[in-house]
Image: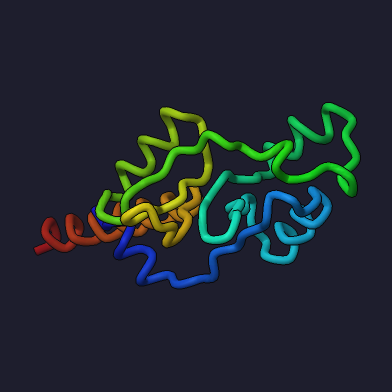
Length: 142
């Protein structure tokens, strides 16, 4: 199974972030502009949380808060789980499933180096399953 590190190297992309003092409106604009479901919340270079579509739905919309006035720090997920770049994608899937989360920040030596989504994990797992099936078919057919 592919490691998180190998995945990040094979699929380079910008890590999208927001400052905790920015508004939820600005966070929603960043999510839409980048076609993603979560942002890392950075204060300087330190990760202090994650802001996701789920945070918006549950902590802003359902509570009747105003998106243009509410600060990200007031509604972000401040207690987050991270993964090491040396861990495997199937471990990532297990962590996501067990904790009912869709995004995992990747940390190396207390430094944020990337983010993996459930969609990323599924793409890797499907590709590996397809490769295994092709190998088995080739073996069977001779």
